[in-house]
Length: 71
Image (tube, rainbow, N blue to C red; front, side):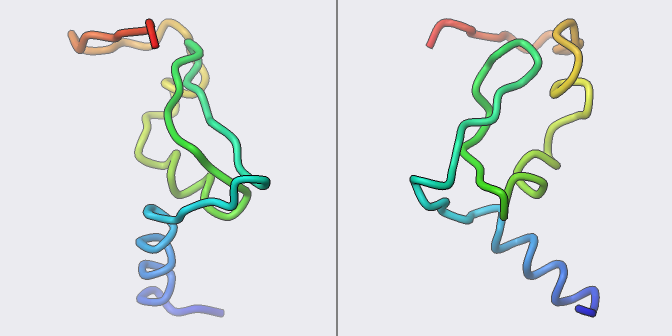
């Protein structure tokens, strides 16, 4: 079982993890806006920085932040 320091280091490494192209995909918010390229190794860590409602509720509050859905 890893100690807390090892777990923190692993999370730090996964935040900047470069996914293998054939094993990765783009994760989208609940509105269909692309958030991050992820794989099974880093998905949880990379999506942790978003509020849960951003991932599940298409009517989430943006708190006045402009959202440009035209990519």
